[in-house]
Image (cartoon, rainbow, N blue to C red):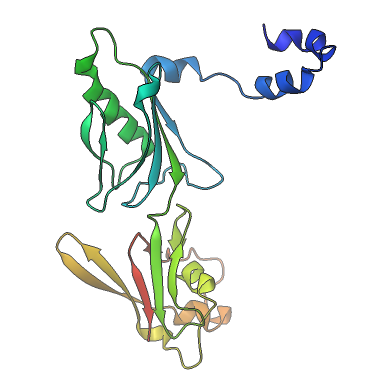
Length: 216
């Protein structure tokens, strides 16, 4: 109805506003019926991005402005939300987090619980580190996108002189302790002529949050 009146509104100088409003369609009926909406800022975060400690999330419970929050995931991977309590967020998608919040809210409503929207506002928790013989060692943010070791080297400015790519390693913290994963980059970084043309390449190791790529 509002969009159909754009012609009339133009005589009142409001056409620009109506066009802007009409450019954003309402939430799909199916998502609304399910009561869970996972919003991922596609220009910033991969749709399958899994939340990390330190990430900032927008959480909205439809129909209740008091339950609109911007929360940061704590170092232990959890967040607190009114009436829903403590929620495990780390290593989960925004859709999974929205579903958990809705389930926890359900006992507080006589009828069906309201729709819950979770969006990644800032993926600051997805930080990795490149150390050793690179041009600009330090910490880097991937913006929520998966980054392999070659891309990480590029972000660090490339290899420095005398870098030993044959003995590069990834240091990774796991629940069982720190692991050391060898990464042999010489075939990729020392000439494509050594690669077998036409054959599928072995996937390069991907860096996760907190990982450290060390080039000795």
